Image (cartoon, rainbow, N blue to C red; front, side, top):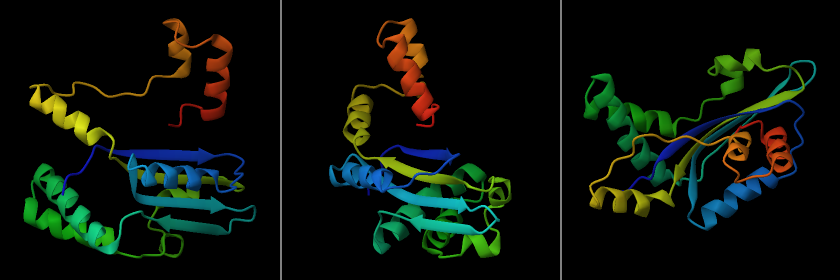
Length: 175
C-alpha cells in the first residue's frame, strides 16, 4: 500500500456553527482522491459540561488494519521496539472503538471550555504521492514543509493586505 504524506490537524471552535460544510469538504476532497481522512475525533462540550464525541474515518475495515500496521511499524522502528511490535500496536489502535468521553482517553477534554469544540484530524495527502515519487526519482528530498500565513503573503505581494487579514481572521491559521 502506498501512503501519502500524513498531517495531523488540531482544530478549535470557540463558537461552533456546524452545518455540514466541513464534513462535505472532506468528503469532496476524498471523492477527488485528494485526501483521505485516516481518523477524525471531534469533541463538543456544551454549557453545563456535557460532552459529545464524533469519531470517524474514511478508511474501510481492511484499510484501517493495513494502515495501522504500516504506521505502527514505522513508529515501532522509531521508538526502538521494532517494526513487528509496532505493527501489532498500530492495528490495535486503528481498530479500537473506545468511547473517549466516558473513559477519559483524551486528557484534553477537561481543557475544552464549555460551549466550544475541538477536533483532531489525521489526513493522508493522496495528491502528494505522485509529486513525492517524482521528487525521489529526481534525487530530491523534502527539507522543510510549512503552511505560509496569509499575512506573510502580503510581504511578498501575493495577497492584498485586506484579503490576508480576512483570511487570517477566518482561519486563525488553523489549516
